[in-house]
Image 1: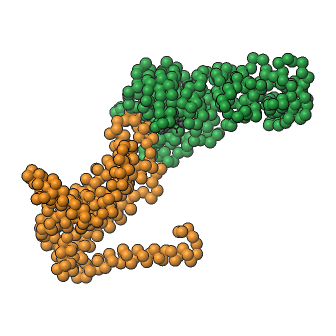
Image 2: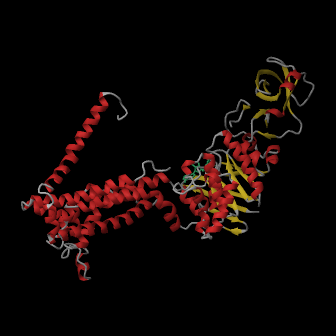
Image 3: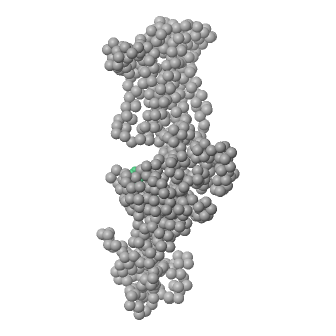
Length: 335
Length: 270
Ligand SMILES: Nc1ncnc2c1ncn2[C@@H]1O[C@H](COP(=O)(O)OP(=O)(O)OP(=O)(O)O)[C@@H](O)[C@H]1O
Ligand SMILES: [Mg+2]
């Protein structure tokens, strides 16, 4: 294990930002800290980096107890959401900063910086100031700067959060490729489940200062530990007392299946290749999604009597009654 | 307001210009005019007067010392206020405006109460140790430093607040110590704030009169500063000498501000 967080708690005044968090992050992998805004992701990342001090618990990095170490001695590269570029230094001097601090020979610094600038495709911008770069370029510069000192682990706080959707997508594919090249243990924070599922080897889901689940994207998607994780990873709908994904809801005409629930088609919406069918079972509105071909083969329309059931083997999670008012059963996650 | 078009905009400009001319430019111009009424004679006269030359030297030395003190402590206090949370921080923040709001003459009297050679709190003890504060150069430096205290701080604090802590944290995670972070990251970022604060402090220090008058004792050739010379000459009907000295004082202060506004970059890189 490369990063070993044990029993970490952190309060800001009365507010509990992290409560007894334990996470093990494997070496050489790309791990995502995923969770909603305010869940404590940045706080955990900053505690690992030594930029924030935990109230309780320990942090180990590469087998070393780092709990009491200052940030500069942890061997951690940190990339900030808003780049934290050194505004008065050129791109080259930004990247060279850590090496200059370590008093490496000039020739070595020049060579290493050239390598890194090539790695992040910024060779032709070496002599510009950060203000003369685009957001994506600044972020790549920040990444090169963090990599320059050959950190044991690389931590990125919402590295693409401030960029537009297209650049974001490009950069995250690029990060994946870069990681496959460089192989440094990397942890990045995101609240975008698609980003985490697409890029990460491992995902740590954090909510309300607690770890909800740790696993590979497949594990999280196929066997979510609870309704929170299930809801967070994509659209869900409720059938009976179970939470299920809309594409795992099968709609059939003619009720010969004892597990199925009878209902009536209440609404049909077509979005591109996907058709959303809302079925009213009397007390619930269940959402089922299917391809257009499947929909045409089914041959139903608003008012048709149908039966709905969960596809056998599909992941389901019991709905936890938490005192909140009963939801409509129709829930499409934003983002 | 400045974006409006038509007569309103011109009227606004005219009012502002007239205000500044009547209040600042014209009076200063008249001082210059009086100085050069007889060509360079007046200026030569005061520069050749050993007592005036001594006063000018004393003023410069005092100003430099108090600017150095105010810069070092000003930057330190600014960092303390912006980067740390501690009990009494708001009180400290409010206290820093006192030198601007209290009349310099009150400052002078207060310093005499504390450091006065015979009856001050510390005065006698310091005097026994061989250090005379009041009626000597240290007192003048103290008084001048006191009145110019907030100027560096008020310039640096907003800049520190604006740059935030992320760059400093990035430097630390790249291995920089607190000292290296300050020298390589914080200082370059606040350098224009500090420069402006230094210039304002310098101008203020050169021109301080009230507090200095109380603590200096105004001894000719010893503790009489340039502003005190101006007053003395004016009261003794040596108007030419008074204007010439005043002109020199104003010249240095205006020159500082002009130089800085010329070398300051138009658009600071962000
Ligand atoms: N310095 C601080 N002082 C007080 N409260 C803080 C501080 N830093 C964080 N918090 C609080 O701790 C909680 C967790 O913050 P954190 O920044 O870790 O969230 P996050 O998961 O990174 O959210 P986001 O996705 O919005 O960045 C938030 O509710 C935040 O208000
Ligand atoms: Mg965050």
